[in-house]
Image: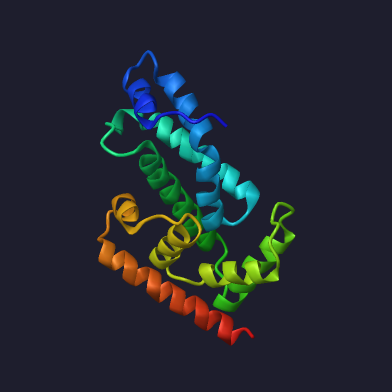
Length: 183
């Protein structure tokens, strides 16, 4: 995979005559990383691909709002996370089921996904994560899987580092309790 300089991509995105080239570089550079950010929230491969495609469409359509103040990845991650959370909210509205049913459907959905290469423990972890409130789920996912620093998350989610740390620690406690209750 090619590694492009963030400043080089920004420069290309700022000029109408080079936007397409800059956007192609951006897509090649960040597609995989964004896919996994989305996948950890959305869970299934097909849905993740759809959300990722929507992310890039929204990014392309919103190029005029990108002024280069933040890193390209931060800007894209913000779009991807918002698209992922919107998708999850829509799915919850479509399938209103009891908490027990929704938790077991996460594991069942994952285990049935031909692209899911985890084991039962990973499926249970995803169940536990899915049971968290939206903010805790997002913070936990970004910190645990992406190892994102709180300072980066703060910019991405427009929230204080202190509240992010609190959300993460509460999420960890709830996940631990989930595993203890499912032994």
